[in-house]
Length: 390
Ligand SMILES: Cc1ncc(COP(=O)(O)O)c(C=O)c1O
Image (tube, rainbow, N blue to C red; front, side):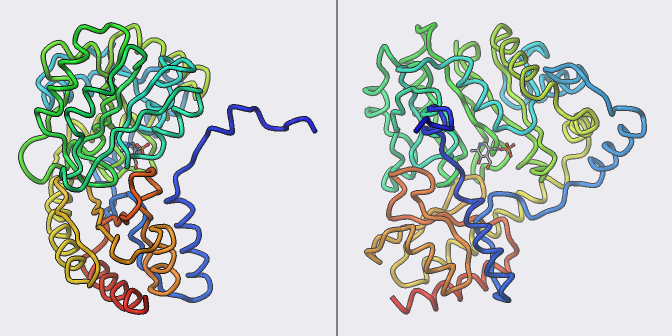
């Protein structure tokens, strides 16, 4: 029989968080009470000044097509923000705005990676990386993030894996799902290996850049000679609790930015006009609410880490950034996926298996602490009860 779907679809993966969310919602429909620690989005509302800016822009007529790469005013605001926060000089022509940060991952891999090329990526890591690498027929080369290494890349292993076939290295710091933060020497090792290569790009996913819990965020783009080689990805979803607005962006060399804009023309035409004007307000307006949100996440981090460590059989490191914990559950001697399912079905707590983020996530769970302290405490009790049965 003739295959219905294009062969390339075989390689495409998914994001399990949405499947677990659907399962949890189905249980809620049956009357069960579920605590949601599966989805990676701030539980806070988008700050009011940003919402008001969107309404104002809509009323002022920002309801039509706008330039594919983004409204000039927003590209300017992003260029200024990235220049200041990363200590580099970014030009508005080097910025592309997309509906969420995800399309930048999609488009940069489409624009740069050929079948057979090697792409290095963190594992466990955001599942879209591996999915897209497979989709374009490239070879995924995992960079394992190990607990004993505080979920950072291993310098020697990383240096060894960079070959003449490597076309892209994906970095993500602060990291989803482990909460790990790459150290300066991690970034220097990569920079040192690639600084003389003009055929290799770094995709630096910095969507959690505003959420480091110790010290200041450091971008590989700010190391000498690295700006031209880096696609610096950031967005509004996590920093300003704007996941549903769909707005992300990246800075990269101008010729690549034009190619990504061309992919935008072929797919979306442009990012929603009035949300872009709200993005200008997000970057230029008061930062108090997003700062408050990060302070709150920091408090919750301590609550969830201490709660998990009190449960027999679980050990959990303190994450250094983002809003996730990645506890070790190896002592239960059960596949992580089955354990996550048990915790949902018996305990009523929706969590993700570490393997939702790649093979190196076996033996771990991912919990998001973008939920209230009350709900986190409730979840810990429910988890403990359900694990006693094993
Ligand atoms: C590491 C990482 N990159 C990118 C994204 C996608 O962000 P957006 O919602 O802006 O598309 C996420 C969302 O969970 C993420 O965790």
